[in-house]
Amino acid sequence: MPRPGRPTTAYAVPKPVPIPLSRPPVDDELKRAVLAAIDSRQYILGPECRALEAELAHDTGVKHAVLTSSGTAALWLTLRALGVKAGDEILVPAHTAFPTVEAICLAEATPVFVDADEFYTLDVADATTKITPRTVGIIPVHLYGQPADLPAIQDLAARHDMWFLEDCAQAQGAGWDGRRVGSFGRAAAFSFYPSKNLPAMGDGGAVLTSDDHIALRCRRLRDHGRLEKDVHGEVGFNLRFNELQAAALRVLLRRLDTMNERRRALAARYLQGLAGLPLVPPATRQRARHVYHLFIVRTPRRAELAAFLKERGIQTGVHYPIPTHRQPAVGCFASLAVPRTERLVDEILSLPMSADHTDEEIDRVVAAVRAFFGA
Ligand SMILES: Cc1ncc(COP(=O)(O)O)c(C=O)c1O
Image (cartoon, rainbow, N blue to C red; front, side, top):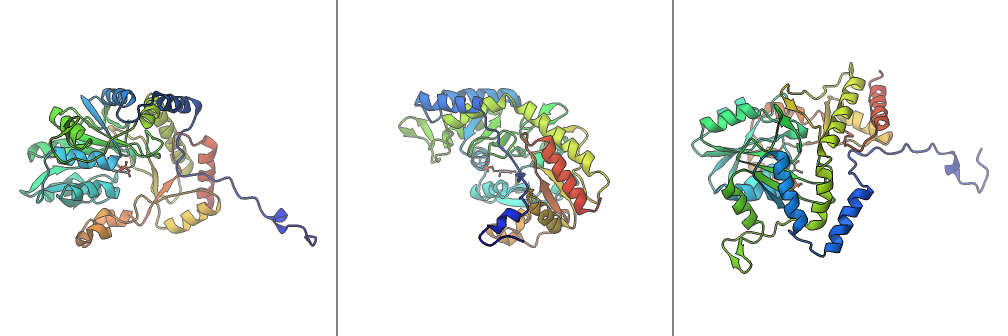
């Protein structure tokens, strides 16, 4: 019996230490890089940004990188540089983050929604049936860290004389037959959002391309369409990047492969620990290097499982519960038939994943999921 006057909380069960869905890196090397950038008193598109652009282009195996204020900005700038106009149709997966579609709409083109394949990426067979004389391009998304079927997309784009733009926001460092994603299409858009495989301490993105014209136009458009200091050749916008973020990203870019290997090791740990449960694990492509931006399982009991894990301090997510063609912002496409997408959005669950999660944390998640299924 608690004695009168004593706080009853003394008897409360201690809360489990929370496990976040993602944990961005923070350490002294990063802090030193940011402090040095502060001391430089040059904050926008300075030497750190220029060095990062060169390093990103080299790392991806393309000629140019153009840093931008976000991945969404990178997508939109590229679409403008590609000359997209009203009435143009662009093939895009229905199952992606909304910004992929948003960029198409902002460029005044029409998104044509394609169903997902068994790897949750754009289904090339479905895309083929949706090509019309107005189709100008295709945006495959390397979703969750796994490349879309790049050879098939390359072939489709070549046969129909259309460009393809890779959405690499979730797949920095992923590859196909040993070649980095972002080097296959006419251009690629990357995001440095803090949960991404190459995380900034805020928003950021980049356009990667070997096409001189696209690089030049993106560079110009991100800075008010400037031709020179006081001359504006076209109407652009302010979508520039900054030195503090670039300094931190240069440190992390050197660790990208190590961080991705860590994600892959944690994914292997999950796969081993969850084996035998009535859960669908992520399917992986033979020729692809999956870098597990997210670790996705599927179960019809998603809501129950998420609630069970939450009680144990384990954060989960759903990427994404509403397919893009049914978002209210583009509601006129809601009746479209993308059956695989419609099924999977009700069952997918993202478990904690980042290079900074510990083995013990993953083991705790595995144990909790096993307990949920009574295993
Ligand atoms: C697939 C995909 N494309 C584009 C974006 C947009 O990136 P950002 O958040 O940097 O604008 C994201 C990030 O949310 C994404 O996951």
